[in-house]
Image 1 (tube, rainbow, N blue to C red):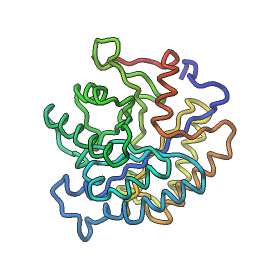
Image 2: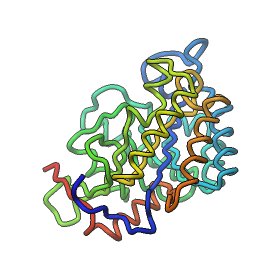
Image 3: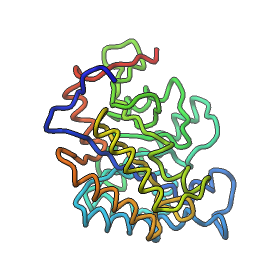
Image 4: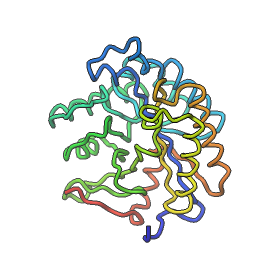
Amino acid sequence: MTTPSPFPDSMRCVVLIGIDFDGPSHEVGRGIAPLGKESCGRYSARCGIPRHLEMLARHGVPATFFVPGYDAQQHPQVVQEIDRCGHEVAAHGYLHEAWNLESAEEEQLLKKTDAILRELINKPVLGWRSPSGRKSDATLGVLKSMGYIYDSSEKDFDRPYVARFGKGPDDTIIELPNNAYSLDDFPFYKFSYTPPSEVLVQWRAEFDSIYRSDRFFVLSVHPRSGWGSGTPSHTKVMSDIITYMKGHDGVQFFDSRTFAKWCIANSSKLEELSYV
């Protein structure tokens, strides 16, 4: 990376922790009953999220919980507890959509989840992460019309940037790219069955490289059992990487909405990418 960092010297490395709720919506949206071997999503609300909230409280660091609307309906008290603990509640689809959406269906589901979350936490929802990575050329316009200030779905850059989705002067939104490969628990625990100790080694190595270069560390995890980070040993890996990062000078932890507001205030320092 040859362009200057947009961050001041005091902000040596930005850390965003995104926790994708991914409860039974993940199965129900695929037409699978969340029972037996398919019940891992129910672990999120019952064990994983409470364990994550306790761990984050011990460290005194914020996180963003990306919540599907269906899971919020099934576990409203859990969503409200996330908010009461001071963490951000953001949107993550309705049924963790894994199918291609027509424009009308996409808009309807985006607005449906937004309404569910707003009613539960009694405050605006400001950000969204795509479930299953799917977006259309209309997605950002709908998000902006609902008052969202950021998206965290793209995989195309190592730093935050301004995404331009239309030709109007206000047709922009902050993009907070997330690495869904080496900084995500899913591929390690789902596909390669990597031991937690080795995941920690990988995440420490990723942080070391980012701390020296792009200074923008986005970790994505899931509080499910199975391939998630909700179980005790997997949550300990999260705790250990947080401890490791806190041991470095100038590391600042943000929830995504707070950091997106910083990006808006400093947008002239960010690169802009046009999707038009």
